[in-house]
Length: 274
Image (cartoon, rainbow, N blue to C red):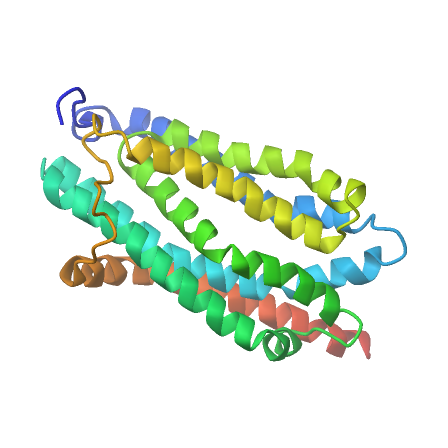
């Protein structure tokens, strides 16, 4: 583990300086991540003949995507918080175990969430407000998103760990990379390849896959204090339980966003009838 010192600025530098160093990149990254659906909506709305139906179908998927984000946050934020504390204590062995658990837990939860949602996708989307006309578009989009759900969970989880381990600018850069590359690839898949709304979903998953590969390469470097070892898929249940307990608060906040999106989507037809 030689070759890199543990980040110590959190205990030595001024709070105002740390806020600029950590908060500003985090805000930029969160803002960029929120642009995913906006970018997709802009392009999907211009699909010939079916743009309005397709964009309505996309809107129906927002509560389900928020719920998926909540599941990823449950693991990612908990692990990132534990790692920050352990690095401060210079307990690098346990910090690496937490990192390994983060990848394993996100893989398990990502697979389970995708399987359950795919098995009941039509009823879920109908409950979220899909109509007979918009259901096919919502289904086409979410099938691809759910097939890449593990990728999304691992990428967002590890991105949080990068930020908490003392490299907020890299975490921000990866977030910007996914959004910018998505904006570039989206029209190619949607219009050039004629894939429509499925192309938007595929472009999103592909960009997150590229970011996940870059992130995994970052954590595979044995010269770093925090890295993934050859047996990183082993699960330590005590660590997993503590990580999930810490992440429960952010999970509930993201789950609340799902409820708000659901309430908005179900209220629209009622309001339009007046």
